View 1 (cartoon, rainbow, N blue to C red):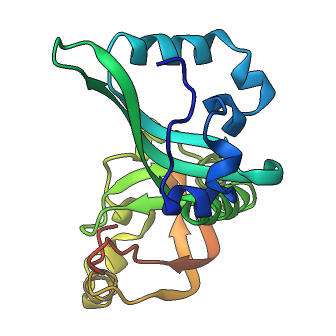
View 2 (view 1 turned 180 degrees about the horizontal axis):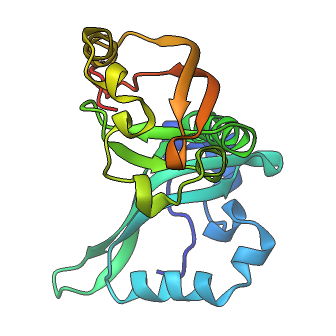
Length: 209
């Protein structure tokens, strides 16, 4: 209950790059950076476990040589016959690869958001969100477009056309489309855009926005 390692299985040792002899008897802080190990947050972490409180989440830990390892983990106090915690078992999954991939993805999205006009729609064509670049280009505020249909940015003839219905039908089938488009900004101002419309797929491969 003081945080000293009693045992670690092969999967844990492989993930962290240690042998059993290098971790058994050492404190859990071996896997933490110095700032965390000295923090009030870390003391409270062990105090909660000492009170028998379960905790879990994503944690940044350090493997051998200071290598960063992200884990999805639960820390589970084990109770004795009298209901008092006497040890803690951690179940962990190494999510480093997924974490790094997500960070790269988020970085790319942030870069696009900074440099491009971005707007999101549901599959019916209703606006879910629009970034500052888009709003500036079209002359609207977010409150004026969120919840409105994409046809807000089109002239009436286009919005009523079979071509426009097919445009949204293709997106609904998950088909990418792109090109130059004439759109209308606030007050009917004509705005030519070079744009791509990108269906976003859910975990089952179905478009959802």
